[in-house]
Structure formats: C-alpha cells, structure tokens
Amino acid sequence: MKNTKNIIIGALLIVILLMAVGYSAFATQLTLNGIAEITGIWDVKITYIEAQEISIGCDPGEPQYTNTTATFNAKLVKPGDIIIYEITIQNAGTIDATLDKALFEADDVNGSPAIRYTVTEPDKTLKAGEETTVTIAIVYPTTTSEVPSVKTKTITGVIEYVQE
Image 1 (cartoon, one colour):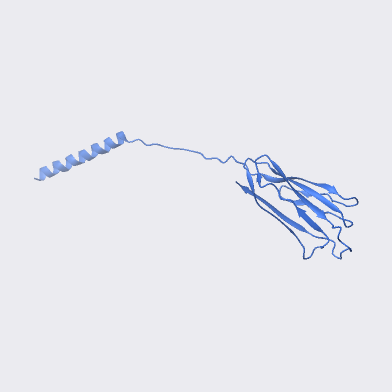
Image 2 (image 1 turned 180 degrees about the vertical axis):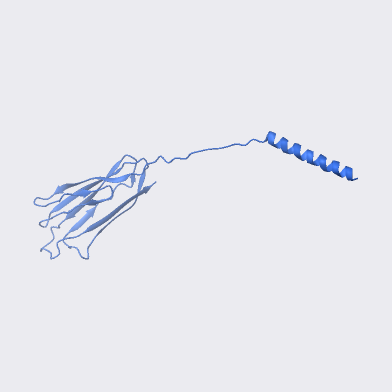
C-alpha cells in the first residue's frame, strides 16, 4: 500500500510537472508600449493697442501692453472730448478659444463722475490663428457743466478665454 501511495504521488508530481512544462510551452507574454503626446498650443494674448480716435488737444499717452495686460493713460481737456483705444487679441495657438467672461468696472466711488467709459466685448469664439478687438472709449460728456474736483477715474477689466 505504501508503494502504491508513493507511485500515485510520484505520478501526480510527474503530471503536474508535465502540465507546467506544457503551460509554459503554450504561454506567450505580450508587451505593449505606447507614448501619448499633447501637441496643442494654448496662446491667447494681447498683440497690439492703439489710440484710434483722439479729440484735438487730448493726449492718449503711450499705450503699453504685454501678452496679458494693457495699460493706457488718457488725458481729456474739455467736455465733448473722446479717446478711443483698440486692443487686439490674437489666438496664436492651435486650440480654439471661447470667451468665458469680459468684465469691466470703473471706479465710480473714488473716480470722477465726469469721465465715462464704454467697452465693446470681444468675439465669443476665437479660432486658432484668428484675431479680435476690444474697443474702449473714454469720454468727457458734453453734458458736464463744471470742472469736477476729482479729475481721474480708473477702469479695470478682465477678459478670459477658455478652451472649447
């Protein structure tokens, strides 16, 4: 009986060994390698600012800009004066952009009530390679009857484009 058990155990070990050899003979290991790369370029920026319309005697200053900021310093003289700035925004990237917000606020609390701003909103969609403009008009209204004691007003604006 003991011999029979040993023979059965030996036979089982041989069968298991044969199964292991058979599995490895028919098993194949597959190796997969891949690379993912982002090739899109996000590059929405200010490319130019220029005073377009200037009343006689007014000084538009020298407008300054970087890729993300624009600054101007308008000097108006009398009621009826106006200076209009045109700011060019370009999508120099390869990803289309959508206007998320365009907010402009004038400091009406501390600023002169005699200075008015009007702003045109840029295009809602700015396709790759396209440009749009924002126009800011600064006006000393003709309805102003006296020179105000506060003679300056600040405007702050944010234009934000996001990926479509």
